[in-house]
Length: 171
Length: 317
Image 1 (cartoon, each protein chain N blue to C red):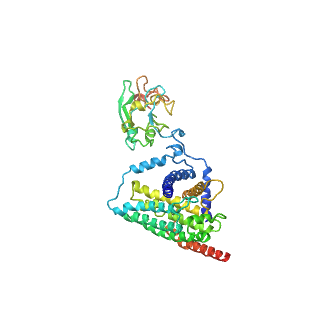
Image 2: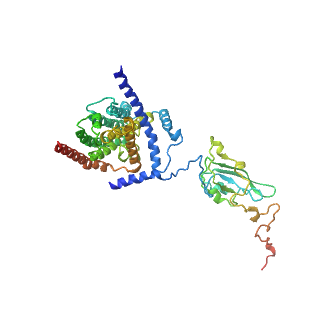
Image 3: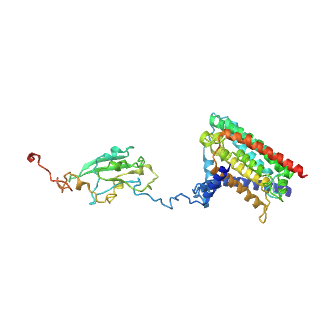
C-alpha cells in the first residue's frame, strides 16, 4: 500500500523533469560522425572517382539495392558506367562501406531524404557522387595500388619496390 | 415559459459541456501522461495541440465502420450506445451548483447506482455479440469485475447518505457546509475511489480491456465511431466519477470567493487528473488479485465503515 503511494509520488515528481523529446523539425538531432545515413560516393584527393566498380558492395548488400556496371577509361582506370542505389530498399546496414576496398562508398550522418514518389528514391551516380574525399581525406587508391595505369607504371606506387625480372632472379 | 426554458437550457448546455470535457480529456490525458513520461504529447495541432481532439474526431468519423460478419448485428450496434446513454443519464442527478441540476431527484444516489449497473450491459453485450474469444473474455471480466465492485460502491456511499440524512445530491452537498465528508468518511472515500476506478475500468483496474493480454478486450472488434462511443463513454465515466467524488466527499460546489460552478469544475478536474496519474503510475493487477481485493478487503472495509458510522450516529443522538 505504501509502495503504491510512493510510486504515484515518484511519477508525479516527473512533472519537474526535463523532457527528453527532440522537437524535430525546429530542433535538429545531433548525429554522430559514424551515423549510418544517406550513402555517397567519394572522390580521390585529386578529384578522380574512387569507385573501381568491383561489385563487392552490390554483392554484400543484403537487400540488393545497389546496381552498377563496370567499365574502363582510356588510362586503364576502372569506374562504374552507372551506379544506382535504390533507397526505398536500402536498410542502411553499412555493409557496402565495410566491403568497399577503396573507401569509395560511404555512409553519412544525413537522414532527411523523404520523397513523395517512390521513384525519386532511386539515386543515380550523379546524385551519389560528391566532390570531396569524405572520411578519408588523403587516401588515393591508384597511388597505393600496384596496378599500372596511364601516368603510373608498375613499381611507381607508394612503398612499392620496382618490379623484379624473374628470369634474372637466380640464386 | 421560464419553467420550460431554464431546464432545457441546463440540459443542452450541460450536454455540450460534458461532451466537450469528455473529448477534451483525451487531449488532457495524452498531455499529462506525456508530462509524467518526460515527453510532450500532442503539441502540433493548434495551440498546445488542443485541436488534436478535433483532428482525432474527424479521423475516427472518416474511418470505415465495419461490422464483422460473424457478429450479432443488432446487439453489436446497440452495445456502444448503452455506455454513453447510461453515463450521461447519471449526470442528470448531479447538482453542479445550488439549483443547477437537471432533475432534483430525491433518490439521486440510487439513480446513479442503478445507471452504473446498467452500464455493465454495454461491455458484456459488446463483448458477447462480437463473437470473438478475446472480446468474450473481456465481456466476462467486465461482468464479474463491475458487479463485484458495484456492491461495495453502493455500500461505501451509505455512510455519506447516513451523515447527510438524504439520498438527494443537493442535500448531501448542503450537509457538508461545516465539514466535508472526506474527513469523517475517509474510508468510504477510499473504497468509493477504488470502486469508481473499477466501474470506469480505468487503467490500474482495466482488466476488461487489458490491451496486452486481450487485445483491447470487449471492443477489439469495434471500429470507427462505435469504438469512439466506447471511448466517449469511458471518458464521460471518468468525469462522472470525479464529479461524484466531489459531490459526496469534497463539498460539491462549496468553496470561498469563486463562483459555485467554478469550484465544482476545479474539484472535478483535480480528480480527473488523479485518475490519469494512476494510469501513469500503477500496474494492472492479476484477475484473481482484483477479485480478492474486492471481496476480501474492500467489501469488509465498506461494511465496517457502515457499522462504525451508524454506531457513531446512534451514540450521538
